[in-house]
Length: 375
Image (tube, rainbow, N blue to C red; front, side, top):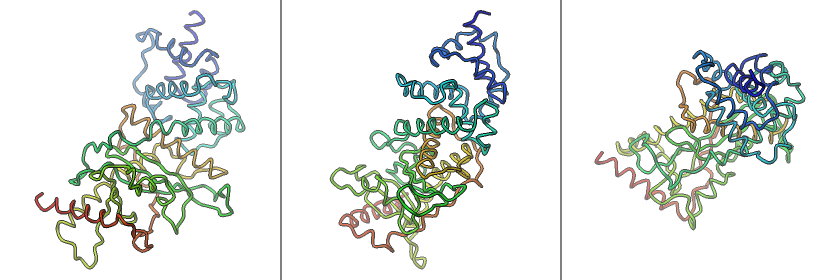
């Protein structure tokens, strides 16, 4: 076997086995050639001579939370993003594929940097540097994968309610130890993740912030400013997001009717049920995020900035994996990992609905309710 074929074989071994000390030994043999060129060489090896048992694919996905084919696409995406700036990578002796797999291993479980480092022959100090660099790279790529749909496409309906682009919801990411915000003196035990999800449980918009029991995260997000912008509205008048009572009724954000003393009509009840049905995609997205990247179950970080980067990286990967054609599998979901939504603010109680366009939003909602009379 010539030297080039040997390199290709070892990289293929690294991608196929991907486990324990074998991974570290294989990756160390990857040369300093361009990662993409080496991957291309590996693909040229005769497939008949390297047939891999099916269960190895499952092992790869179990450890790295994505298929091998998805990882290769991720490697290409990161490679293109850093093209021409490879010298800025930390720990030059560690290849880009190894950096990504090392980080994915940390994100996918609760193992310590020392434990994962033993499998990859990476020291704890180097591991921290690599993890921060890779997650920052994933977070920087998030706008490429977490973005608003073109033409405010609604896709498949999750309920009988027309014009729904997505559902807005919020969850809290627990921190292992309370962390202080960089510019403040308060310490926080969790991080707030607000997301808009479509019917596929894909993130359309993400806002990560420190929690505030006196103020909804929505009020601090760019999304809120876009929702109340009447000169350049985020969506046309016939399109909207949906959310629970903890969100304000806006022209492009429909919420349920309050059930005061059981006075709702059957049409109002059916409208409310249509809103509630949209909770499922959001809950499924949050559950999938926490189940796939279990490090978020108890995020061990030193600053809120790093916490935000890690959560953003996980959100980017969530969409990336879906875009690679890997659906969310019920068997992989652990509903016990879904954090409770602690957004208990009711906007009507805080005088936050007294805008000029509130009447237009109420008229639109009444019109949607009227649509249930004939249905």
